[in-house]
Length: 315
Image (cartoon, rainbow, N blue to C red; front, side, top):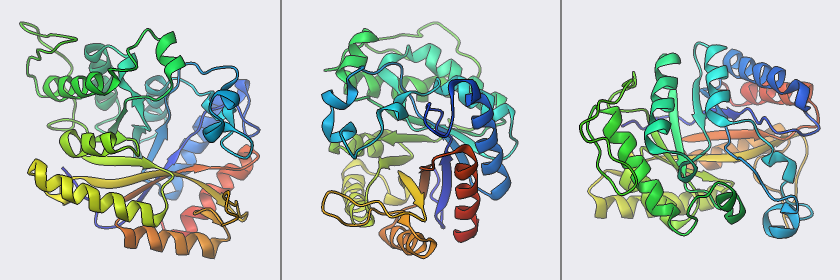
């Protein structure tokens, strides 16, 4: 549908209870980060999706949440579509998106109605970020089929595309035969669909069903490899590579280097000049869109980091 000529930037208004916010201040935090994004020139604001997670998350998933890895508390987030409705009502310009919505947890028709409603209420600013999910314990709690999550996600997307265009849908998990769906989204034929995930299956799904692939945490060299893989898949699927945008969500840590297990600086951490160099490398790698999670200890620091990034990126 679209393919930006210059890299664009979004900001993840992370609603988790961390040192930067408290349960009582989540609404204020979301509003402040959203207004900052709107004021300083970010193109979009994003919310993650999580319902529950194990109390021993770090022990169950040490590679993702063990010592020195991601903080388990970052999974403690507000519901995505509800929060994006709040964000849309507080803004007039920025796009609003999910990074990403776990489709197997939701009914495809009700989910489509919630999303098309959000597109209408936001004035056509929705980006529909979709994914399969990855945590078996969450699937068990939600009474969702973990093993069939890929095929369920595919059907959700097919239903969403059909319903947005006023078509009836007949599938294995839902049918709208003889029914009229409403509302139709303002964006035609449907809001942009971003498919999340670094796996080969996610990349294939992006080429088959999406307007963008939405990866997480990849380096510029990894983004370049993914771009090449998408180009090859586009040939087999009869699509142009320019029809599938290359997008990424990653963490920004300004003025502090974060080292990986090999002792090397992680991308998008460090001084303003190091960040600029990283952005140049992403641009050269073919990245179209970068969504930033900002890692700072307080709400004030997070807002200031967003402002400082906007200046160095010339937003």
